Amino acid sequence: MLAVVGLWIFLDAAVAAASQLPAEIAVRGGYASPKPFWEAGARLDEYGINAVFVHSGSLSAELIARARAEGAKVYAEFPTLNGKGYVERHPEAWPINERGEREPPATWFMGVCPTEPKFRAFRMRELEQLLERFEIDGVWMDYVHWHAQFEEPEPVLPETCFSPTCLAAFEAATGIRLPEGATSERARWILANHEKAWRDWRCRVIADWAAEMRRIIERRRPKILLGIYHAPWTDEEFSGARRRILGLDFDLLAPLMDVFSPMVYHARMGRPAAWVRDYIEWFSRRLGIERGRRPHLWPIVQAHGEPRAVSAAEFAEVMRGGASGAASGLMMFTLRSVAEDAEKMKALRALYQGR
Ligand SMILES: [Zn+2]
Image 1: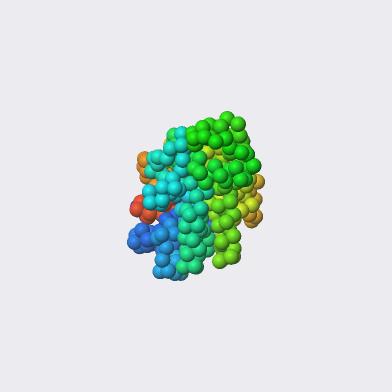
Image 2: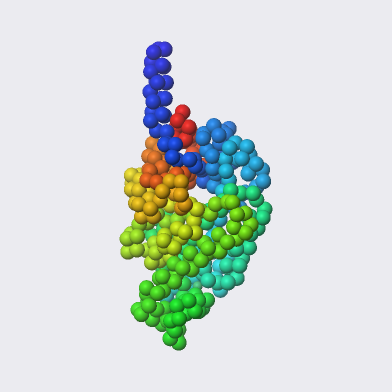
């Protein structure tokens, strides 16, 4: 009996050691409030977690103090171009499609017109207040794209935004004079005659949001990091929709970012666990990521069992996939999903702590 127990301990230790992440993965993070983790009786340092990424609305001084006491840095997730709750009250910020109509929500996501000046001022003020209120280690921009849904197997990719502020800003930025007429006619004219200029300009609008947020951070808390959660698509996928529809141009964003966090949610996007590694390796090559240099790569992988269950073994596989390429950090969506599952807790400890 003793021998059997001894053998079991030996095997268990061997498995754990084999699955520990390499030392290059310096940032061992978790996304969402650590409260469920604490409620499960765990400490962050026991599990090797040295970074938590918490929704800015869930932050508190107590949470930050406790996370710090357990050796973790605290980063704030900042919903940037999320319009839900705003566009209903401020319809001038509703994204307008090529038919000149308000584009409906893209499944659960509602975007916003990124050039509407009152919305922009509102969001930047929220960032200022966040930085004033909390001593955080960084801000992670979330939902930094034109209205669309990319977190599903079949994305929703509407053509937006042809609102008066967008059309005027496009004219001003490019010098292209739009014909008079209904919004739908002007939209058709742009897409038929100046599609490239339109799509390039849309990417610059998104990058300009990142640039302004960077300026605010440098003024308020110059030492902290600016990161971005973003769609995990290559340049070609969905006919180039990452740039064409979302307006995410990696080359424009790279000089502005400290950290890229591709959202490699394999289960949500209906992809195999092995895809996570493929994407992280592609992304590392595509951006020429080098460990120890900006921009850094800290992917976010899926632990959450939705829309289907994600097993502990699968969780460990996507964590290893996320730690591949030139990644130097890692986190999972969400800490709660791990805290609620003893097997995932065990896997996390093996990955981050080697025991
Ligand atoms: Zn607009």
